[in-house]
Image (cartoon, rainbow, N blue to C red; front, side, top):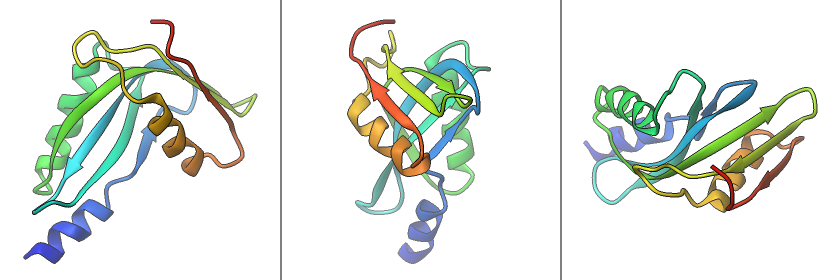
Length: 122
């Protein structure tokens, strides 16, 4: 039923990124049954292309009956020793994510970090 999909959606982590380094990220809109959705951030150094992040996440979500679309991408520079994350850049294939949205998600996940973003840079 619909409640199950809601629970599945609630169980999807809002942020899943590498703990250190500079890497590509995507902003994804995850959909459950009906109109419910949730935007999530995924960023990993293993991804050569933004599409790699999107496809891997889509496969994981599909196993839980959820789908996703990519709202855009960029890069993250995560410096844990300085407690800083910088959000910038864009994805050639998906366009630029709304870095302000990404920043809000990261702030919720890393409340003691200084998180900044810029629209310039690749």
